[in-house]
Length: 241
Ligand code: PXP
Image 1 (spheres, rainbow, N blue to C red):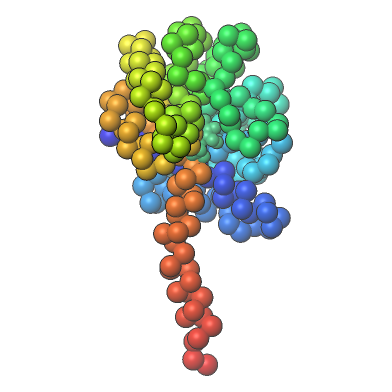
Image 2 (cartoon, rainbow, N blue to C red; image 1 turned 120 degrees about the vertical axis):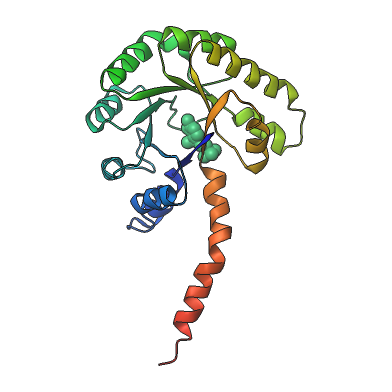
């Protein structure tokens, strides 16, 4: 069975817009698990724009919930990850001005730093993953770095599909990289910009075991939950006294 990781950063973004407590990512994590999510992904960004430190602590304390914490290579963030010990860590690049994680890690440039972080995470029994572009070189470096998994950045593929452009070359690249990674004993995940269509396309690949999906999934759930919530309010305001 392929696994679905649900990224709930956007729940925190919505909560933070009001500076209050609702909607709480802690409940979102529990709710997503109950609904069938195989794991929950949260990204503790250096600027703390969505998930906060207390969210990580609370969400990681939920029993029998597999948590995938996305972190940059910033030593302070790595220290937090090693202290809280989530089940999984995915190392991602981080750029302060970006709206979302725009591309994969620059493994060539950050080889030694990442290798040492992976070593420390693995010593603490944390499953490691590297968020990378679909590049054969990066798969080979990932093997040298001894990561358990890689997550292929599917943003480019998603943009091509959404803008109805030719995407077969990008898809071939993803397939080639995922096959090579599997041959090297690395588990392959996919994430970024995935919607129903792109997920359907990628799920045909036996080589990809896990999908991490956030923005589209949370966006869709607004539409599918809206009916019930409007009904709730209509019944409250019209309740006979
Ligand atoms: N995987 C990783 C490593 C990410 O950084 C993100 C974005 O935070 C996602 C998956 C989810 O992307 P999206 O929100 O576009 O589904």
